[in-house]
Length: 408
Image: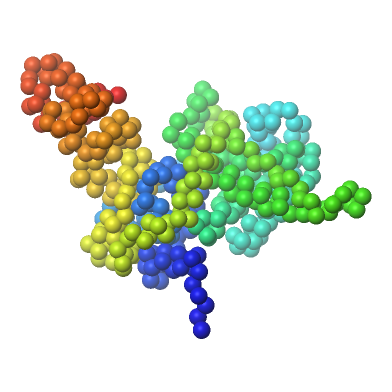
């Protein structure tokens, strides 16, 4: 007699059906989880990532292959820089951690660097958890974990993550270290790249918090004279300021900055909570929906379009389906294709045609600030060019962008 299917097993079975028969699930990594936080309103990405769909293969099957990614030159340069930062037992890295995050502690004259080699990701995860516990119990010393393996529960399944480094401070607190090859010029780096690094680090912070919670729940070893042996030790503190290490200016010398990731951590936590409810999204899909790249292009397109997407230009650097979603967004005239800031300024106006119609005075509430700004922009442009605003409004290519920009 078959065992009754629980809600968890039923969801996994449903996601396997969406992925396609005999199609293995693509494991989520920190970059994928961070990208979810970059676009929290996209149900399409949530269901595809939750089901473990290979979006790169899916995009190729749809005829819009992803073309972004790290070049081999950048990959080699990044590895060389990371090796330089971690040379001599991580002496320079620990110096930067002390300087930027923990000046009150004793300078790291030397540090423990535990061996984290084990069989398989599960073995490495267990070895990392043991090393973190041992380092936390030995107070007064610095410990550097080089490429530890962390596990984060995502929709009931573990996602294995590998940060560049985790440092255990003398007080037992933990810090995530992100090492990137983009430069810091005069003490600051590209905000977009820093934001992406912060979202990625926030994923590691969440994974460490899960480990810290489990360590805090373990009974603390006490002598009979010290009190109740069943008491739990306090959970280690995971710092919400991570260390971002980059090359200084145009050299290969490392410099660093402390980055607060509390906001990114909160957004990522909410997104992971949404992933545990992807059954609600799956229930809205037509029966037989499948995202297998082996399907005919027409059937695959229909399956993908059955899930609403929230496209924005930022998706081009974070999602393999971005080119497909961009073409669909442009074809439907959605203002989100112009950027999230423009979309936020336009309020209830969700299409380019609706924006132009409001600017021409053909639709829209005059009391709406967005409508009033568009009409004002149309009038000013018409006055400058000596033409009728209604005629200018029909020139979507020229007037549309100017009218939208005038709302800012």
